Image (spheres, helix red, strand yellow):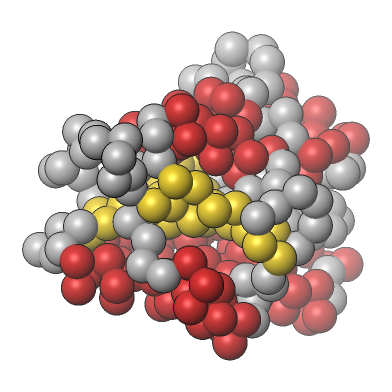
Length: 229
């Protein structure tokens, strides 16, 4: 990659956690990164659930080459019967529609340019389903299906769409998860430890780069051995 004309990336949820680590790692590759978040130290402040706001972000950033969708929330850690429709709407709007909105805003410009990389952050919860995290699990299953669908749609355009499915990562988001729920899902990891944001960032950087050319619509596990399929 030529540092004089670097690829450009947008990382949502880029103020903390996996998003911040991904931004640092991409910058190490001489990629011009713009971070977007509602809170914290990000380059731009915008709500991924607001499609109109993302259109304005696109006007600010111009075309980008790499989109990393890290913005997300866990939602309530309670049994399914105790969840409410409003809780479902809120988590699905952020985790699913937020990802859809950024892709709708930026992917067409990638297609026009004939090259692009989209990395969506799913979760092992979207594959296995975590007890007392039904909303979060369902939202991340939707991200996985979205990634597979979009990957097939765009397979001949030069735009690759892949996802990573982390197990528990040491982030601020998981720090707010119910301790009993967190203890249970951590106990499922054969490596007997949680992952670090920098470990997720390495996989994101790989999927965002030039070396990946024959993988799209795929889900890459980052689970310390938890994944079973």
